[in-house]
Image 1 (cartoon, rainbow, N blue to C red):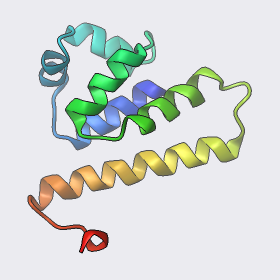
Image 2 (image 1 turned 120 degrees about the horizontal axis):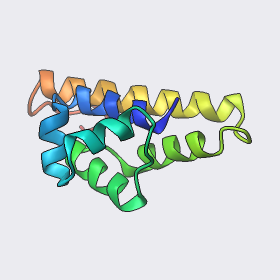
Image 3 (image 1 turned 180 degrees about the horizontal axis):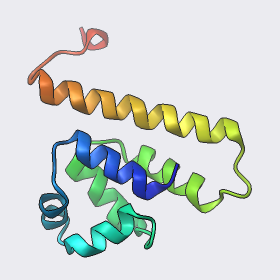
Image 4 (image 1 turned 180 degrees about the vertical axis):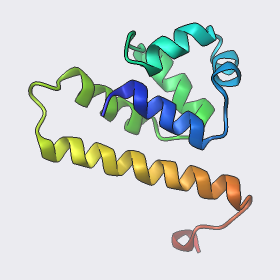
Length: 108
C-alpha cells in the first residue's frame, strides 16, 4: 500500500474532492494528484496538515509513508497492520459522515 493511495482513500472517505482538499492544504490540485499517484512524496509537515484536515490520526499517514519508503525492508506483517489501520480509519470516517454526532460505543 502506497502512501499516495492511503491519502486518496482517506480523502475520498472524508467526502473531499481533490480540488477542495488541495485548497484546504494550500497546495495545487495537480501537486496533490502527483502525491496520490505516488509520483511525489509528501513532506512530514504536509502529512501532518493532511491528517488535520482529514480528521485522521497522523500516525496512520506516517505509518503508510514508512511502509512505502522502506518497502524493501518491510515485512508482510507490517504491511497488513498498516492496511488494517487505514481500513479502520476509513470506516470510522464513513460512519462519521453517515451518522453525524454519533457516540462511539467505547466512549460511553
